[in-house]
Image (cartoon, rainbow, N blue to C red; front, side, top):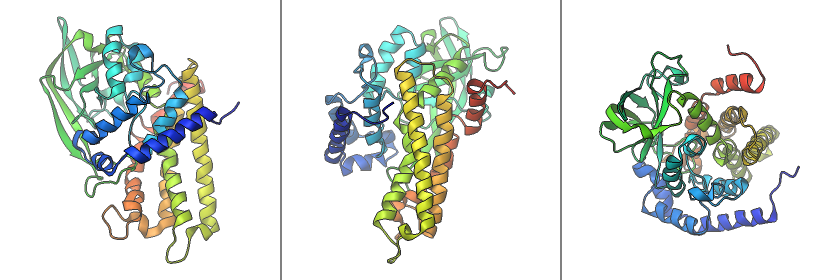
Length: 400
C-alpha cells in the first residue's frame, strides 16, 4: 500500500501553499485573533470566497448538497495547509457528518450546503454543569407540545455560541427511559426566542494567544434556554436516539486534518525553532538528549498521521468505522501533551513567556500551547471515555 501522495495531490498542495502566501494577509490574521464573530470578519470572508472560486470548499461532500464529490484525501490536503494557520477551510464543519447520516432529506438540503460555504455555523450544545464526561447525565429537557418541543436548560462550553447561527443541541426527551435512551438532538437557530448566551473568559484571554495556538480561543460560553419552542422537524434522527446519533457524529467529526494537526504542529514548530535559533551561541540541537527527544516525538507524530490516513480510507470506502476515531482522539491529544512538556524542558524559562513578553519566543506560542494542550484531552470526549469505547467496540470487552 502506498502511503504517499500522487503527483496531482502534490501539485494541489503547492497551489494551496502559494494561495496562502498571497491571500492570507495580516488583516486576515488580525481578524483570526479577534473573538468577534469567531475571527470571521470581512477579510476572512473574502478569503473563503476566493478559495470557493477554486473549488476548494467541500471537496469530498456530495454534489447534490453543494460539495464537489471528490477525494477525501484532496480535502485533507487543503484542511491541513489552512489548518496550520488556525483556519478551518475545506470541509463542512462540525455536525455535518451526523446530518448526512441521520438527517431528513429536507435537513440535508438546508444545512449541508450552508455548512460547506460557511453561512451556517453550529455551536455544540452537549455539556452541562453536571454533565461533562458523563454526558448521559444531562438534564436539559425537551417536552413535546403538539407539533413543537419546548426546551429548558443550560449548556456549558458552547464555544461558538456568540457567533454561531445554530445550536446542535442534545436534550432529554424521555426522563423515564434508561439514561442513554431518552436523549434527542435538535438543530436550533440561535435567534430563537428564549436563548441567551453569556461569555466565559479563558486563560488565553489576557494576554491573547497568538494565531496557531492549540485551543487558543479567548472565550467560551454558557448558553441558557428558557421555554424555547422549536418545530418537531428540528429533531435530528428519531426521538430518543440522540445519544447514538451524537456519538456517531462526534466520531466522524474526528476524521481529518484538525486532530492530526493538533498532534504534529507543535513538533514541527519546535524542530524548526531548534534548527534555526540558539541561546547566546549555544544551539539546543547540539544536545544529544534534545535530538533524541525530538526524534521520539516525530515517530509518535507519524503514528498519528497513519491513524488519520486509515480513518479517512475507511470513511471514503464506506467501511465500518466504530472505534478508530476514538483511538485518534486518545493518541493525538496525549502526544500533544508530551510535546508541550518536552518543549518546556528544551526551552526552559523561555517556554513560560506569554504573548507580549519582551523575550517571548514566537510571540509566546509555546507558552500558550502549554495552557491549551491539556484541554485537548477533554474536548469532544475525554481520553478516558475514549479508551473505554476502544476496549468495548474494538477489543470486544464487556461494559463495566
